[in-house]
Length: 273
Image 1 (cartoon, rainbow, N blue to C red):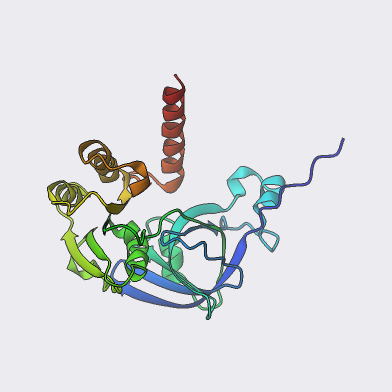
Image 2: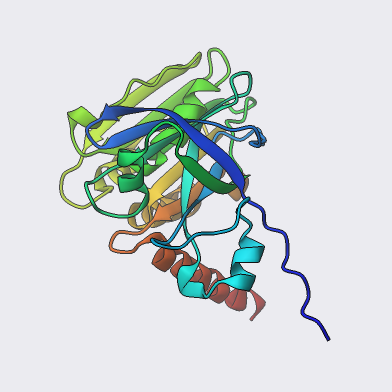
């Protein structure tokens, strides 16, 4: 019996148009793309595929074909990034990369990207956009959540009220975030434990009402603390809170995704017990 044909997992292609260093540790790439489909969320993310050094893949890149024809150690490295902006008319996809020198894969690639360079990706996914019926909004995150927070601020309804807390390394990493809403934005510069400023700010915040739509994303440590606070202490229902750890300190994305999968498995087993 012949082997079944590999499942089609054809990636989409984007091509670098231009780049900009918007802060010392944030690189913005604008890419042309004819295949991106906007899903209407402000936290839409894509899975970027970075080829392993010395490995050439057939194009168009299809992960079904790659997994069928290449050993696992030669599969492209996948990294998840939030889309900062999608310009439908210009067919331009904007992605911001946190850059810390030679650390990691995506940041160094973005630092060296030149017009014409190819970038393959899967997606987008996503699940959050500011609810226009909410009385107010609370947005909380670190650098990794800045693209989604910036996109959400830009898509707030005119006059919508939002409280925003963002933690970055120092004042040089602050960005200008504008939108039609009434936004009260507080920047925190990192001191002590990562995210502790954000946890304290939310815990001490006097909520104007429970009619709030919340977005909390970033390093998993502070996200876990705020999940407990918002659901247990504040009593907010799950459909009012978009909350997730984008990454965990000390782990790359592969390690963190494996840990998340194990956590989800244990939660499912506990729920079924």
